[in-house]
Length: 255
Image 1 (cartoon, one colour):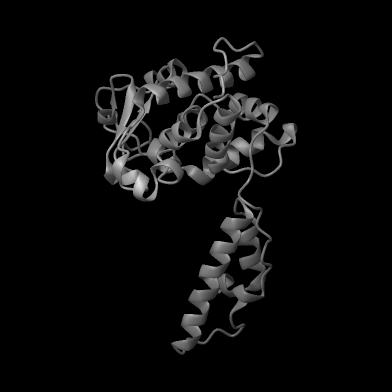
Image 2: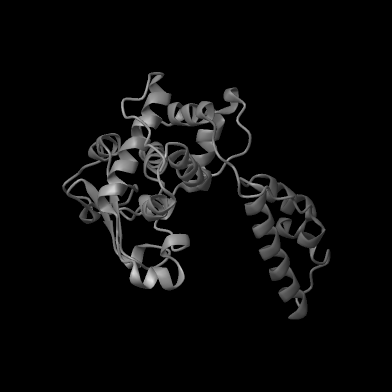
């Protein structure tokens, strides 16, 4: 079978986005082939996945420059994936939280995520800037439960959407980037604008630092007002870079 040939496995891995993804798929295939061999299944070429190239993974420190931010924003089409990418950049949330967003979670100019939908299992409030609200309003439909997704089941086309976006970015010579880099860019950008670390953590719904350990048990503040100010400041910064204008909202003064 073609699947068991080293060349086809190599071609499959090369077709994937990102060294980390390639390495994970390679490891899973290698585990599967090892299991098959132990079960007595005759693989004439052995564990071909184990002989393919293992890629060196980049450290998770990628932060988009202002030029890259603008290029990605302008390369987004007026479709579901383009809207999701822009919302990830405006809110700093995880891709599943935006891709599987439901209309009953969008209320009173904010997104209300239950603990069932967050990584740390804690309820989370995401205030929406005017730019974010404008994007969401384009997808309103009375008959839909989910904001995105062709079959009203939430967005599923991540790989295809990213490949199409990267193809449109080819002329901008961007080095490799991931959707998670948007989240890191939001956090770093907010810090540069003077947003305090505990507010950034609240925006991202992180449980560390100010909200970790014993301090987190007693500090139940959600900082909704401060999160709204921070996200409005960040959205204005993003739109200023995209539109090539000066920011309207001044950076926060550091204590």
